[in-house]
Amino acid sequence: MIPVMRPWLGEREAAAAAQTVLSGWVAQGPKVAAFEQEFARRVGAGHGVALSSCTTALHLSLYLLGVGRGDEVVVPSFSFIATANAARYVGAVPVFADVDPLTGNVSAGTVQEVLTERTRAVIVVHQGGVPADLDPLRALCGSRGVPLVEDAACAVGARYGRAPVGTGATLATWSFHPRKLLTTGEGGMLTTDDAAVAVRARRLREHGMSVSAADRHAGGRPVVESYLETGFNFRMTDVQAAIGLVQLDKLDEMIARRRELAACYHELLADVPGVRAVRDPAWGTGNFQSFWVELEASYPLSRNELLGVLADAGVSARAGIMAAHRQPAYAGHPHVPLPVTERLTDRSLILPLYHSLSSSEQRTIVEVLRAKAV
Ligand SMILES: Cc1ncc(COP(=O)(O)O)c(C=O)c1O
Image (cartoon, rainbow, N blue to C red; front, top):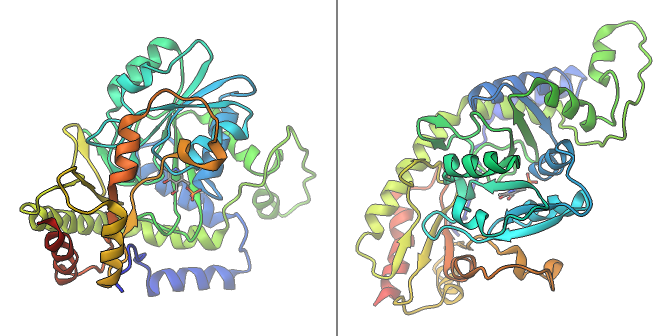
């Protein structure tokens, strides 16, 4: 079976994890601090705060912004459900905006449609690693005084213009789940340029403690901590961060390889009728974390039928991005019509793309799509 994704992990990550285990310090400590610093530098942010996942990073972002009961948070329904759930975690109401048909991302136009006087934050997702068009969104949100949070779970290494996604973000959140390019098993990060926000985020991830456990340990002499506010346990471990540091070192190679594989797919799919593949938008370059294709109305099979045919041919593809408003967890939740979201979620699928995928495997995959196209 050709899997949909295979993380690019090897001896270097195994050695880094082993060294950390043998050091005796496996909880959040010096490796986490080094990973935060390197990651923030890499995405052009002033500060990185490592967390247990992107889900907790989204939750913490809204908490830091003071979003709470009765407030509205604009989110795409066309995203992993964690984006919408973050609003509910703080007692707010997720308000679904539709997406642009080419990128699958919310735009200033779709967000404007659902802004109200109760909107307290907007979360833009760089879906599948395709950068959203940020300038118009920043202008819209800025003019209303509404903070824009970037859910960059999938987007490490993607660029808006020439700058890495994350540069200049009020708050950006990242995932290191194995479906993403850079993985630490589970894990996440929050990045910001605001030093005071980073200090508070570090405190909140660790129960609101005045001095972190790692600092107390490093200090040598006993320090009695106090608990300044009600916090959480959203910590990453040093074992994860040690793996993350090695992965970060490989990031340029990961992105180059994925872009090379995407270019090969584009070439192979060029003469397959009824199939539209995701591409770089005019305003930036993606990392091709997900290589999705949309089946146009002229394609003879439904998406689910094609997934079945691919599975029979030994190819593990996946349904495209989900739509949160269609899930039982959001049954009865009011929303504006979301025609583009519904079309993309029904008619798109994600093809295998990972570092060690070969061009002959890519040809095998595309041949299945081509054979059914006519
Ligand atoms: C857009 C988006 N946001 C948030 C998440 C949640 O990330 P994590 O699994 O690190 O909590 C994901 C995971 O797939 C995602 O794709």
